[in-house]
Image 1 (cartoon, rainbow, N blue to C red):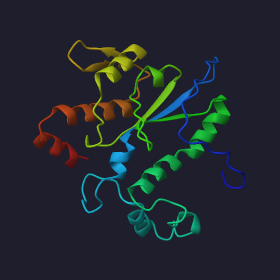
Image 2: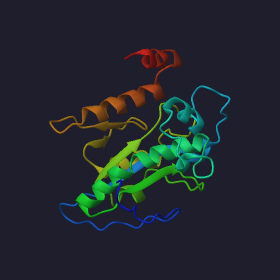
Image 3: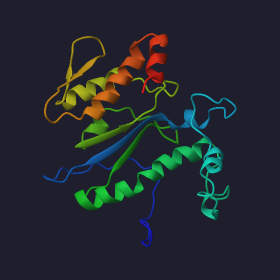
Length: 205
């Protein structure tokens, strides 16, 4: 993206649905975090939180020592690190937009302005490819809500209802994304298993 002027940027806008066009996939990114809750965590607590941007600068020195990253231009706390995650997808968003003709929609469970967007039909209605990014803990309210589970089931293949509470199944075939299956199984285990067993999972390779 260097050498070209970035498109103008908007913030805090309502999503504009993308019209279906055969052969042009509509890609969406969904961050499962509560941005305010993560950004407001106490930096004095070392575990189960994101690094502050100041900590990132220390580790990555001198990568972030130019004026665009100083305190006048960029958030220095945990929020700054969250923004690094957003910025890390910009090249991907540009490539997908050029390839598909559709902008990439980016959603958050709770965004910077406090607006809540569960993973429901509003996200899935104009999404052909959904990429979900989450964390390994539930402090930020990342446990799936019943309506989110219902939305996944309604989306159809490869997901289906198992009839066992809030559990959903996934069809395994030649097109199965085994990395996705690995992530889903681990996340489910973390939710359902006793804490001692979950601790053993965290220690495993």
